Length: 410
Image 1 (cartoon, rainbow, N blue to C red):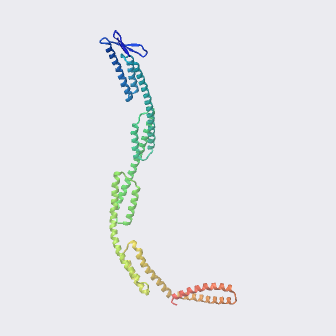
Image 2: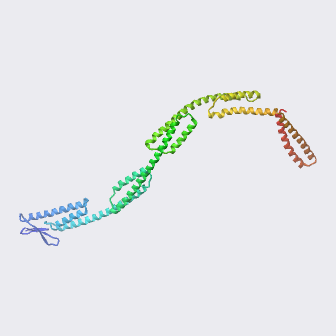
Image 3: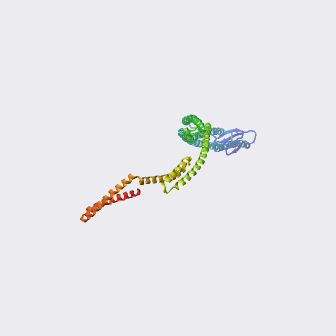
């Protein structure tokens, strides 16, 4: 008979294992060799169970083995341990399996909590995506909002699914927001296409008119009309991209033809007016030499000759016109002043009126002087002062009348 702390072999070759309560259980028989060999064989069976349990423990600790699969494996090993044909501390193996069950349960709860947390995070994330999508649905930043909505879809796809009801409800809102934005964008661009088509038609008419005016020589009205056409062009809005550049090139080309021709004509005119300015400046120099006027008749005849030559000369540059014409007008005003002075000097009726007025004022002054002297002699100074003020006023009028009479040469 051979024995071991965990089992023994009797004389008949029966192999026993000791249980936790101190009893024994038959695990097999051995007839082919010594009892020691029998115990060694059944101990190897025990070691095999130890290895399997160790492997399962490592799988539970280091892999993502599901709780269900882990529990199935544990129960399978427990059955093997319970009915094991092995010699060893089977109770210790059972305790290790119990501890492993607790570990699996703990991991199950951790994963459950983690999954709940992930689900909650996913819910909040999807709700945030829905809110943003609904805000973007009202945007008119078509390109940016469209790109952002596409990015939100990719983000949504990367999030875990929720329970079916919650996920479907959120997806419905998300999808509805995208559809609403797409409808608004489609309507916007449809309206924009219609506007651009109207702009194209309007600009076709503007181009046609611009081209019809390009050879006009009615410079002022045509230039004004081109400015009006440009205002209308800007107000018409943009046509489709494939038409806009071509229409603009035609429109601008027609204007260039007209304004190039006008510039050439104006350049020629400016050169001619520059020569006219030189001639008129020479005549202004000649007219200014008539001043001061000593012989009115000769000066009048000379100025008439100068003015006739002046009128025969064409236009001068607009910015130079006020100065050169002002010089001629100054000479003309001097002649007019001289003529008026001569007329006053030689007009007998005016001379007589001036002489009569002077005589009347002289008599009034002489009379007032006598009255002032008489009042002072009588000691009536108040009356004398009053009469003196009246005398001063009449004397001033007399001085002016005498000056006017001198202009008549008398």
